Length: 350
Image 1 (cartoon, rainbow, N blue to C red):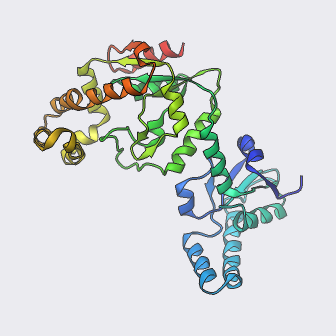
Image 2 (image 1 turned 60 degrees about the vertical axis):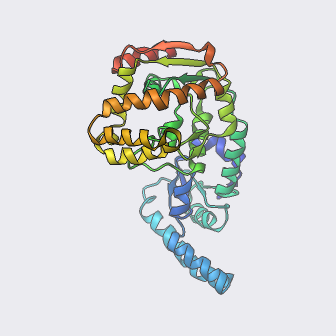
Image 3 (image 1 turned 135 degrees about the horizontal axis):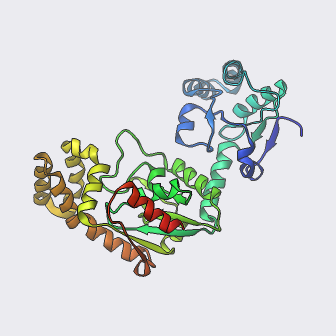
């Protein structure tokens, strides 16, 4: 094969794991929004340089923009060769892509090929990759989903983590979305990814699953925080067999106190989130909950939130959206110790 080899997504993505390094040649802000799984960022033009070249292109013309951009691109690529890739052997096989598979990745691929590396450039770049992922999520693989249902605090996320730790296939949408899926679900210090990144993460998980084995997933709503679960994936989940995870309320309160310890330590932050429930419950009830948070009555507050808000909302939603929930297999947790979750996971995993 002649290098640089320019290949399309249909050829590249099925062999993605065969590349030694996947290089995203776009700027750091483009990379942050979404990228091919496993890619590292080596901008041929960083954000500031792109602004400079783009402004010159618009205000002066293409020729002057290229005269400014070419030495910047060359300098950046040279720096990567001298540092990041200095120890790479002759048979090192990188994949390089940029926005549309044009000048940025083309320049890098050409230099790599001249050095002697068997480099592949993605034809169509990230834009073609993104179209491929969007199409794949409109027709995802036929998987044997098993939906873990259960009221808030029943341990669904912990059970998924435990299932994954013993080798089961798990699609943990809340982890992929960096959100616990409720008004209190924001994870401190961990912003949610972009919608495109969320979909990339889902696609990356789905493509690796063995369709002959079950895939465990939580009974999510259409949105996890600010992010939307792809429609067809959601439809497949809602048509799947269900498992009803059951845990007594005192243990649920204990589990939620552990999982939401940041709110227990910061009543002000908790109260700010509770304000979002005013329309549902009225200002008087929210003020009562504020007072309980401010005076350290957290276990009682959590219990009230379960009884008056979370449980009624969840049960309405689960009955409406998961058609096989009435026939769900019941799975009761005796407690919330590690051993309790391991026993439950082994029962499901077989």
